[in-house]
Length: 262
Ligand SMILES: Nc1ncnc2c1ncn2[C@@H]1O[C@H](COP(=O)(O)OP(=O)(O)OP(=O)(O)O)[C@@H](O)[C@H]1O
Ligand SMILES: [Mg+2]
Image: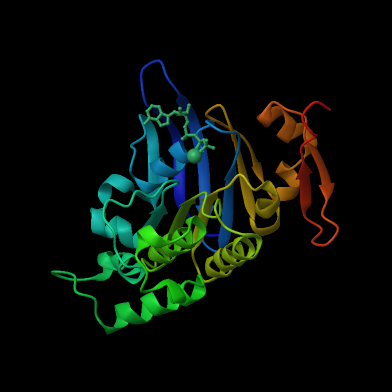
């Protein structure tokens, strides 16, 4: 695996006495899907924002292809890494096709009018995310899952080497969830590194090559789904008893939580 994204001894604090991410070492490689999992408030989104260069570590360094993020201009960084936030704020209403086209801006010169190649990419990524039928709809009129697929198409249009996605499937139905995870896995094989945050441990087990388990601002475990998704490890991280079996159809680890009160 060729490493493209590296976090070396990264620490981060929002406030002096608040949440603290402590000394995280992580590497993401081309050709792989990496899943960041862990309880609410454990620091997953914070970690992804550090990787995207939206937050700067208070200590340590984030680098892409061996260069610290601070060495890149915004446009250069946008050609290397694309970021889908957990809650993508839409400040004004646009047609879905125009939202996806915005993803092409790091590749455009001057005033940034889309060229023929940009239009080909936009068509392709909308097809791949099954949202070509939404092209002429305003974002504000789409359902949660439809909007999420358009936002994923928009960062795919950026054609980066590193894709950073914060809960990309949280609003998706079972078919679209499998479709997007499968697509990300396929894209990673075409020389991309995918890093995603998800609460869907069973999808993560099936589609991720490597998992990072975060708890209370610390990287507790990393490894293959088989190595990380063990009942003792997950129960410790989530502070609750969790059970792990084997999925009868896929053979991947299958996690279940006991019913409330049991
Ligand atoms: N802008 C901020 N200012 C201060 N504290 C913040 C800020 N953003 C997040 N936090 C705090 O940092 C901690 C980690 O937040 P983060 O969003 O990284 O968690 P997460 O693992 O992504 O959780 P979730 O699964 O709920 O999305 C939380 O305690 C949160 O309240
Ligand atoms: Mg989050």
